[in-house]
Image 1 (tube, rainbow, N blue to C red):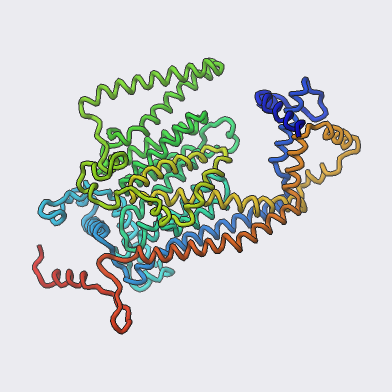
Image 2 (image 1 turned 30 degrees about the horizontal axis):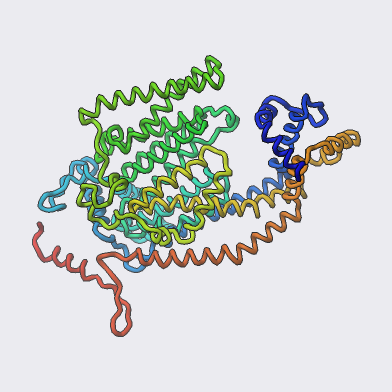
Amino acid sequence: RPRALRALAALWRSRREISFVATHVALPRTAAPSSRRRRFCGMMLEALKSATEAPAPRRSAALLVALCVGAAWLYTMIFAAQSAYEIRLHAIKTFGYVIHEFDPWFNYRATVYLAENGYKAFFHWFDRLAWYPLGRPVGTTIYPGMQMTSVFIWQALGKLREMGLLGWYAHAREAAVSLNDVCCLVPAWFGSSATVFCGLLTYEISNSYAASAVSAVVMSTVPAHMMRSVGGGYDNESIAMTAMCATFYLWCRALRAPKGTESSGAAGLETYLFGTLAGLAYAYMVAAWGGFTFVVNVVGCHAFVLAVMGRYTAKLRAAYSLFWAIGTAGACMVPVVGWRPLKDMELLPPFMVFVGLQVQARAMRIVEEKKQGPLMGLMTLAAHGVALLAALGAVGAFLYPKGYFGPPSSRVRGLFVEHTRTGNPLVDSVAEHQPASKQAYSQYLHHAYDLVPWGLGLSLLGASDATSILWVYFSIAYFFSMKMARLVILCGPIASACCGVALGSAVDHLVVFPTYALAAKFAPAEEDNAAAAPPAKKGASKKAAASSEPAPAKAVRAAAAAYRHPVACLLKMAVFCYYAKTVAYPKYLQFVDYCEELAEGLSQPSIMFKARLRSGQEIVVDDYREAYWWLRDNTPAD
């Protein structure tokens, strides 16, 4: 034991030489090293490399395993999307195609006006019946993304039905789908699409199909996502969650290194393509919901964290520049937003990150052109940073007295002051603007709440640009939701992603990796078969070199061989089957039953309710709508 500890201490002291050996020296095992320490470092690197690089199976076996994994992932994603759709139809199955509550009814009325009068009239519409007798300029005071999306879907379904392409859809087989039915189904449809995008986002974070599939299954029914996306709950958040998950996925996808450029960090075609799509998805998010402030700040903070951590690359600058420029241009076209992305205090930090990345790119170019060392390079970066801060401070000092910058909105102020002291009576009086409690997290996340720390911890083992967004998203979402209960909805995707990382890691190490190891053992690649029987002289030299290896290197190789041994692989699969049957599956059934029960509770319209007669018969009380219909039919129009 003391000898092993001394070896590890020597390894730590020579960590700089390890980096040197890894980048400049390629020592064969039989080569005479220049020093004992360098030889020790080279052997340790070879041992670690052999431990992390599993033997490749035969091409046909690898393809078969990959097809099985891909088929299982695809089936799980389809199952998750279908589950997300079905669980949101409780209200429609019980009460029919009915819009819920006040806000959804107002959104539906605006959608009808858009469908009947067109976009130009909609954006100039002053509704004299809303906020009577004051009236309201609806077209310039709401986020129109949901209305525009619903009208587009309704018109597209009508065209497809005329072309005879909807014969498979039972709802459209006998009659055209009405705009009311589309508005009732939009939350369920977009609940499914948000589930898919959350699964894709988790794959970018973890590079694991198992984590992606588990994340989608959790996202499909987690109450934090379902609370604003039940059938008939025609509210902005129902489509905003899809836009948010799509933006985060496309942003992380833009950061994925193109093949062959992993070390250089150069921007490729995929970077420009997905960076542009991320900007468009963010523009759609702006049109859909006022929570776009959260989305742009998460992406901006993630880009800032990557730059500070020393992971600045050309693809980071290109992806973020496209995202911010295209997204901000689209946001400024939304009437209710206007020039706010360039004026509001809560939207200026992403703009500052955009400017900072351009300045850092110039500094890095100077460092490369002049071939500066680490110290001079750091001084160059510091000088550019000081100049940037001075320039931004001068511009801010010039514009602030002129009233250019807008104050934070009342809802944003509610995140930093007491919820009854924002200065806006509408915000101060709403109960859902109160701080969230631990009970709220347990209610809307259930078992997922317990797995979040495990997912966050295991994510630290990854080393990609997309991995750190998990911590950035978690930190900001947790802070927002702690200050305002309604923002617990933001915790749905991050809790699902953390569950995917935690449980997906278990599936990978207990099922997927052992399967590949068994395939490599019993169906090895041809080059492995050739290397399995080397000449006697070469084998003797290898044996002599192996005997001269330090104890830590031998331990690493032995641990890797034991980890991939067929008996160990079968034992891991047996452990997985046991825990899946005795722990995971019962927990999943509890989670699904709880979500189904809560879905029924969330699917109760305010204008209708169920009741029981003395005989025990269950009826639906629809007196409110019938009273309004009577007033509409028997009194003169306003």
